[in-house]
Image (cartoon, rainbow, N blue to C red; front, side, top):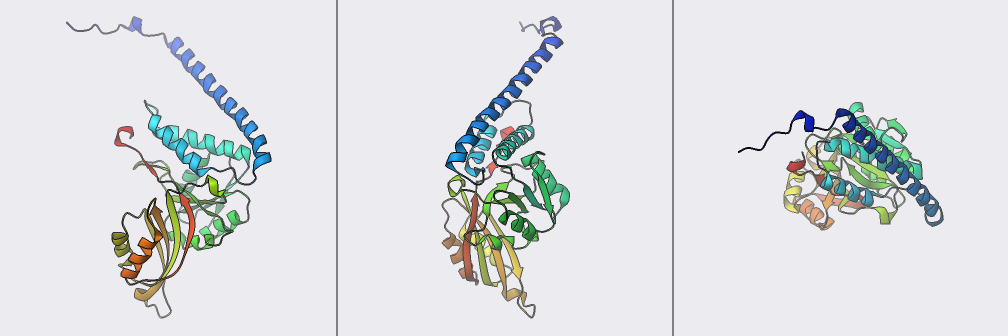
Length: 293
């Protein structure tokens, strides 16, 4: 004997389902307004306790991890991620207004997609042609953000972050890592953020080396272990002897890995370290489980 299928008469009326949707919409709106009231109280507290940027990269990373962990149902994860990113960015903007400066030199559309996906339309967007201009604008601001492509085409822009008073890398986007991400352009976020608000799971180092060879990067990665990223900008010496040129490196080290393991591997590969400086840190990207894709 099989179970009887529910008849159409057992299904709730369409009007009732729409009323349920309206109720949920009103509750979501009410919760957002309630969140705004709490942010307003937070602003008053912060005015007596701290100044500067309202960004909290460590807290944002924790919020996004919890979002992915609890996500279920037919709503695409892309949509949920974008909604939460815009909520976070907008309420941060309400606390301390800021602008997003972005380098469009490697592609206008992809960078704009990244900015709008992660920061929405309330936060002012300022376009630049070149990473150096982005870094300069952020350096002159109190709490603005800079978005720079996370690959060598942007030049060795990270060298400008080496001084103690310079802004630092605070995040890498997209944070939620999956193959079909709608804003997939890899970018570093640069800003001035309080040290206790930073997330230090991945340390980013600026290295300058001499004696750079074509195979050095591969040997370094193989010898040093599971590096998150190595970006190299080769600077040829006079005479075009590229095989013995100098290079500026941006090295991202996963938690627990020391910069000495990289510099030692560089020396074994025939390169000579000229200088090194810590230029920021960011969260480990959250790789979405296959069950959620």
